[in-house]
Amino acid sequence: MNSLASKLLVAVPQLSDENFRHAVVLMLEHTAQGGLGLVLNQPSEMPLDDLWRRLANRPSKAKGVLHRGGPVEGAVVALHTRPEWGNSQVVDGLFLTHQKSELEQVFDLGTTPLRVYSGCAGWGPGQLERELAEGSWFVCDLDLESFFDEPELMWRDVVERIGRRIVLNEADYRRIPPSPELN
Image (cartoon, rainbow, N blue to C red):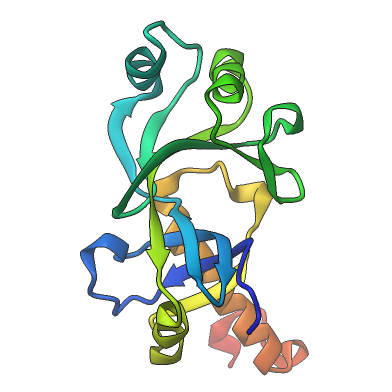
């Protein structure tokens, strides 16, 4: 079994589960015992300052909103670019924080790229493999350069990137005309 940890799962357009419609999931763990990930592109309406007031009883400098990390209840976690406050590294340059003391540091910065999630996506043993075999997910690498872009556009952007990769890998790209009308 090849682990999908640090990869993106991208819901195919036909996926009918409302929890994962047009979802982009960052896999944090994937073993024979199952998988754990975060849905990256489901922002909520709750400002991060409101969240931090609830958690720490004080204001925060963090900008943005809380994201729904998936249908399974879970702790608040943050993805960011500051290694000194990361509890683990997801990929080069992207860190996950879940401990309150480190979250406090990240929330107080106010300027670092930051995404905060509550909840997660989980799969039991063999479940994700079955979904992959059924064709429910595309798999691709995380592009850190566009990670902190608009979450509402993430699914479309990643699907376009996958499409370009497939076309360029499957076709002789030197023979693709610069304009379709020349075809």
